[in-house]
Image (cartoon, rainbow, N blue to C red):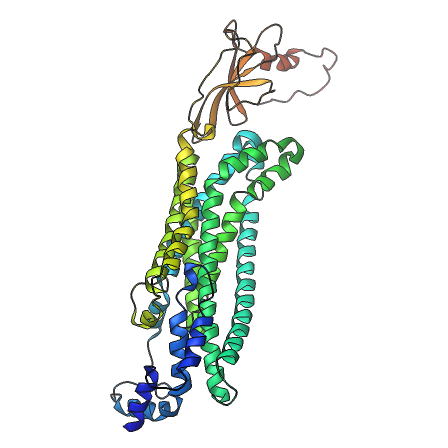
Length: 476
């Protein structure tokens, strides 16, 4: 009993001669400047002192706890002192706020991107080139995001371990702790630093995804100016490299980091792999459902609403980290990770919401963005207004056509176009759906231009009188 009391006093950090070393470790763990790094400082020192002092009484305490376990609980074979839990309970513990929010967010955004991104290129490249190999390259981009997530996790783990070793060497003397105690302290500090790095990577990926979606119409318009150089086959895919492909890569990167076990999650590898399979299957299935069931409609509201949704989820992660020290709801396992609220932490939190403010500012321009307007303003008729009048925002400065009106429908952009080049001293005005011509007339006379399409078929009316001996087949 005296040893148990002595161990409790040591775990509380009271009357122990190594408090100076604990203070230095606490200081070394709080060197990061962002709000995401505020959660690991107090826990590092407290856990380090616990692992270095209470190891002498842990075996007796565990034996007393094991004797107090009721007989109806079946002990674990690997660790007789630890009761077994059902797989369902462990899987529920792995479904944290971070993973649950990404399971909901990823299918909504990915399904929207797979539906909207090709239609954004349809006015320029038509309906054929925009769909060619688009799904295949989208899967490749998601795979690249997963690979980058694995590389980031490996590099983060190795660097966190080195930082933990350096912190233990700087805070303790060579004879203070045994080898096992030093290894436990290094493992604990490295795990805390790795958790901070994973949270930071997820938040940065979500912020970049929101900014890419919010600036997508501007970046696509810039790429349209180089469509003549890129060509019809490479142009759509190179344009998607500033829209769909990076968004899918960032979402895959964030989900990969979210699937990594945290330092406080002690589960078997088989349980973790089961959760990863459920996580991936849920995202793929829901993405397919959203992509197939989402109707065709206006692109701007979908893109900007998705950008705002991603920014809101990222802000939620930052707020939970600031309040609880972890992206989680109040939990007994995380009570010791709650950081102290300081002026620097509050300023860092405010600075972290800059991407959210930029996303809202860009979404507010939807009313004035020419690419988001259903119709065309400042329309001018070629027969009424001279060609020296200022062109509309939808039309090129030196183009040979003028868009008079347009509207977005389920079959693409329905537009009325005037050709500036005269044909037999007349201007042609056509209606098209995407790149398909569905009607036309002469602007000055109002006569239909469809007669010109039937002139080449007049050749079929000419009969060759010298082929009397040839067989004639019925043509449908």
